[in-house]
Each structure stands twice: as C-alpha cells, then as structure tokens.
Image 1: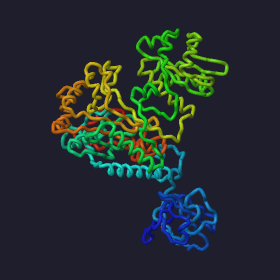
Image 2: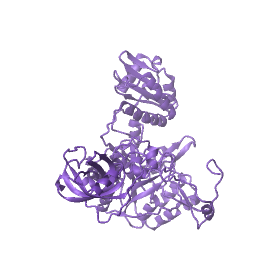
Image 3: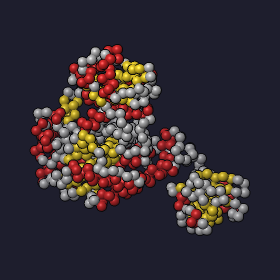
Image 4: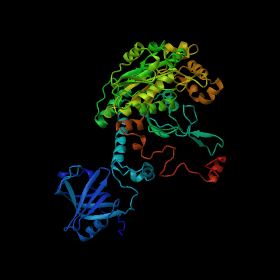
Length: 598
C-alpha cells in the first residue's frame, strides 16, 4: 500500500488541461486525480485530471524504477503530483485538448490515496442521482458539473463588473431579519436572548434595499441569498441566489433598459450569444390571451384562439353553458400531430387536463379519412367548418379545446400547450427567447375567498391612470410590475414602489391590514418614508435560473454546488437533523410529538 507523501518541492507549474504542443521539451509539474491507469506491462499510462482537463502521463523503460512502481500501484482517484518532460505523443487523441502531448514522468508523489469510489467519475454520469448527491463532493469532480460551476463563477463576475460600471454599489443586507409577508413561508430562526421571538431568513432583501434608497444609495445591487419554505421543483430550491437591484429617480423604462444591457452583456461574454435589443414585450393580458401563461415559452407557435363567438349558439351544451356562465371556449392547434395524438394519447392528455382543474378536453383530429371529433355529433357541418377555419386546422392536425371560466381555461390550455409541444418535440433547444411581461393585474381574484387579493407585495405601485379604480373596480387596476421571461421560465420580477405615504396607507387598507397591523409589520419602512423617500423601483433576477437556462440544464441541481432534493433535505450532510434537547432548552423551545419525533 502506498503511503501519502508531502508535496515538498513538487509545486505545480501547470494545470493538466493547459498543456499543449508548444510546451514540448519543458519540465513541468502537474497535480490532480487519477482518472484511470492502464498497465501494458513495461509501459504504464495514467490519465491525470484536474478542473481544467486531463493530461496523459507516461512511464516506460526509461523511468526510474521507484517512480514506475508508484505508477503501477496508483488507482482511480489517487491524488498525485507528477514532474516530467512534455513530449509529443506517438498516437494523437483528438478527443481532448491535450491529445497531442504527454508527460514522460521523472518523479511522482502520492499526495493522497483513495478508496474505490461508489461510482465512476465521468461526464454525463447515468448513476442514480440520489447516490451522486450523497457523495456530492465526488459528483462535483465530474468535468461537466465543474464546467457548470466555473461558468456560474464567470457569469457572477460579469454581473458584478457590469453593475459596477453602471454606478451600482454592492450592499450586503442582513440574513437575520424580521418576518414579513412576501408570498411564501419563512424559515424561522429562534432567538436565544429574546426567548419566544424569532428571526426570519430573508425571502428577498426587499425592505432593506428600499431603505437603502431612502439612505441615498441611489443604485444598489447585491448577489443576495434568499430563502423560501416552499415545495421544490426543477427550477426551485429552498435557498437561492438573486441578482437584486434597486434604483432611485427612475421609471419602468430605466430599469428595463438596465437589465436588457446586462442580459446582452452576460450572454455575449459568457456564451458568445448575441441578444437583439430591445427585447420584445407583451402585456399580461396579451400573454394570457395568446399563450395562457404569464411566462410563455415563445420558442414555438401554437397560439390560443377564442371560439366563444363561434360556438355560443351551437348544439354542444358544454360550450354554450360555459359561455352563458360568463366563461369562455378556447383552444389551440397542434400541427402535424395526428399520428402522435391517437385516441389513447388524447385520453392521457385529458386526464392531465383534469388533474389541473379542467372538467374535460374537447378535441378534433384531422385524419386522412376525414374529421373525427369528441363533440362533432352535436354540431352542424357549417359550425364545425367555422371552428376549423378559426383554428386554421388542416389535414394531419389536432385541435384541443377547453370550455370553462376564463382564468381556468387559459391556465389549463397554457399548461397543455407546453406538454403537447414537448410530446411533439417541436421546442428548439438552441434558442433563447427572452421577453418582458408588463402591466400585471394589481389584484387577483381568489375563488375560495370570494374576493380580490394582492398579486404583488404591498409596496408595488399601481399605474397612475388606475388609481381611481382602487376602491371602485379592482379588476381594472394594473400594476407598475414587470417580469423577464426566458424560454417559459420566470427569470426576473420587479416593480416601481409606492413612496407616497397616503397611497401606501390606502394600499394597506385595501389589502385588509388595519392601521395597527400595518404599523406593526412595516412601521420601520413607512416611518422612513416620512423623511424624504426618493421615487424608486427595482428587480430581482434569479442567478441560479439564469445559469441553468444559459447552460441548457434541466434542473437547478446541475448549477448549484450543494443542492437540496425534492423533500428539501441534503443527502450529503443528512440535514435537516435533530438537535440535542439541551440546545432547545437554551432557546426555550419544546418539540411536540409527531411521526418523526419520539
């Protein structure tokens, strides 16, 4: 068994992946992990890996015997420091950048030995993800993951450079803050000194960045850590990093222009992708009407169409009753889909539609034999032809239709549109479609509560022309709010803030907060606004999501070093974990009995 040696004078002179033919004849020292060892008897090759790539080490008849023996005993993931002379390889490997050269080793130091790893350290590993996450420190040795994190580092540097050049000041805000309502559950931290009281981990630095505007730092930015206790999904982690901005003396156009400049810069410098400016825009109403989503994927067509006027007097009661009850009938056409969407596949899609709230899914298949439909027997030939004309349906197409309340219909069709496109494999993988969604509704109708509720945080400003409707017609009120969408994922969200104390008081009242409640929750901010608050607005852009999209990864776990899994646990350190009762006692906390507690 080899023993670990000290590095001594074997200081690294080059990274493994940086050596080229131009280095021929140089004596170099490289350090790294053994990717693999090939023993050919009197000839041994070792592929040595570091974060820059792989280089081949050669040991032959001319190698010192002690050095040769160390190479013979080296195994996968041993850590070596190797000194030798760069020479041209006899057999060139065109698959790697260092494939023209190798190092004829003259000295080897074994810096660390390794147990047999639980999986091979290779790119695009198909090993079960739970195992890779349990040994994340090994998983992170894989070149593809390392490249992702190196790109994240580069994007982070470009971000700081861009905003510094544009006059922004990076200000750190506290991690332990007061719990304030921001749309998701807080992670709470008990106070040892103030027993019975709790800090919250910030869902965003919203209030602090607004206070920074009052303090006179007219351009704030931060790569802010944010925490939200909500269910995980592919593009959501309980802790994430946000590129957070706030600007004073600006309007919406200033903020959107600043972000567009950043997007063009980061895409151009990081991945050599040209972004055409200005970015396209849709109002919230336009996005919902066209795509059934406020974060539409515009890489493919398949826009929604409205059949309400066409079918309001038809013989199909599902359509007519939806319209009579104030709803709508809408659909979309999947081009050349008839061979994929058989009756069996449509039944599967119908179950998915029901799973997200629809009562059913009407359809038309344009087959070689003619028109087949789930509701054709209730319509006249002219009525069906009118629908097909509106749907622009041709032979080979499939039309999907939903009838219900407008909001539900749009939401269901928006979801189905993406599912169908994915099934048909018509979503281009090499496109980056960015767009702004603007003029969001200020209020959202809550079906269960039977009332309007706030769609945004309570400091979002309504559009000036909508202020008269705040108390008379909430459905007409639009917000000075905006989202940046990339390929169907919300990348950034922001708004112009309220700084008028009277309007802010009115907003608290409309949101159901009494004067006392508002002061208890937000008094420190509203008090600050009494001392000369500049007009301001901002935006938060998800760094994790940005990197994920730019690298075309399928989940955030591919661009976050130490992610959580679906149940919000981290498999490597096995957190969350129970703590000693003594620690709880110091905090004045008791645990009630439950399934996981004895």
